[in-house]
Image (tube, rainbow, N blue to C red; front, side):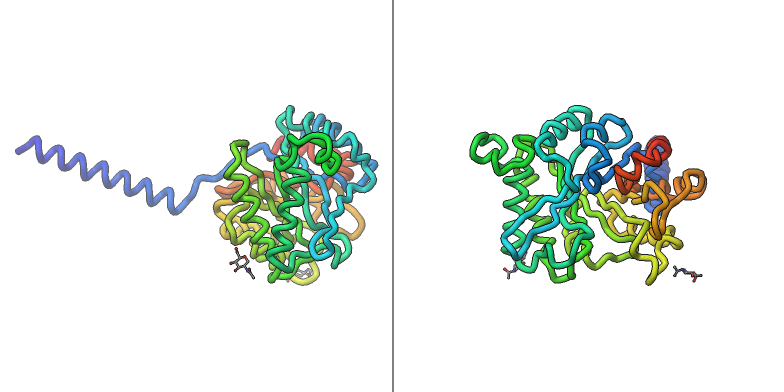
Length: 312
Ligand SMILES: *[C@@H]1O[C@H](CO)[C@@H](O)[C@H](O)[C@H]1NC(C)=O
Ligand SMILES: *[C@@H]1O[C@H](CO)[C@@H](O)[C@H](O)[C@H]1NC(C)=O
């Protein structure tokens, strides 16, 4: 009798403890703390140095090449790397990957509106084919003929970034995202790193449809620049950060910053302010991912990432 009673009390106590644990976990998800992850954009200025040099600094865990900024209805695809000689990039990509730095390619960008769009499912599927065969695993083993169409030869990029400055909610970036995710899951290699780089104000209607697929591993939110007139996003960054982190709990959210104070662009944060004011707030989120730095050229001048790297 006594034994049964004791057992039953134990069960009750353990159950109560477990319940409390679950409740606590539910109320206060564990803070992410530091991740050490820093992403940088490369390819906007020839004077920033090579991709290899960017990776050799040891400051970055991912480099996003930018941009593939012509695609869609024209049946034309164009990569714009601001005059960097394309011939040596394939070797640099492999060099970066050997050092553990991921290299991906951004589509879209701030360029002229009308240069890119995905109005139909078919244009999304066509862009998928282009990305797959030209930069990803498709065709990378078929040397000679196909290699000619691959600017980086048999180097295979690690991911694709959606940087949709000119897009309407109707465009089919969701179809592209799902196709990339599907293909990524069916090959035996490490999965593709699908990322999006959005404006700061939540939600960003240009990217919302793609993000709703749930296929994105990371979202880099640009806490600088264009948004400020309308919604004051960089001033009320905590509010925006909370919305982004809450909206996409399955994605890692990166805080995007300019590497230097520049011409009328808002959002520059002094390193000291970043450390004392921003870092503790950002790292409270369970899905804090790290920092995104815009861009390699500015960072090379300012050395901003040498601070960010330590605190990320
Ligand atoms: C486009 O693709 C989506 C998602 O696969 C599908 O639901 C939709 O019916 C397609 N639209 C057309 C016009 O084929
Ligand atoms: C942001 O909002 C604050 C408070 O409403 C206001 O004082 C400030 O002028 C706004 N800034 C911009 C750029 O709109």
